[in-house]
Image (cartoon, helix red, strand yellow):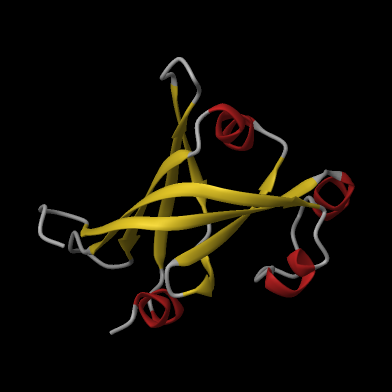
Length: 128
């Protein structure tokens, strides 16, 4: 199964890890990736710590834990390749159309950050 199909079909919890230029790590809950091409994904980001870290260190790790009672999922190792500020594409990609903090969210600057997928591993183990 192609990676884009996997993320279309599976539900679960996702975490994106970044670090700044000094190696101080941040971990944040994130949505499933938006596939631009099979090897290129994008995330919609507010102007917060995760986005700020990517300004000085383009590397990130994404962990996806499938819903259920087993430890099944994927780990993606990523490199930022570009970003767009307040891109019109964000409105078409956004999965959640309503949010409790809609007014706050809409007022924030949003970035569409693109990543190259460098490596894909299962949630547990080191076999690609």
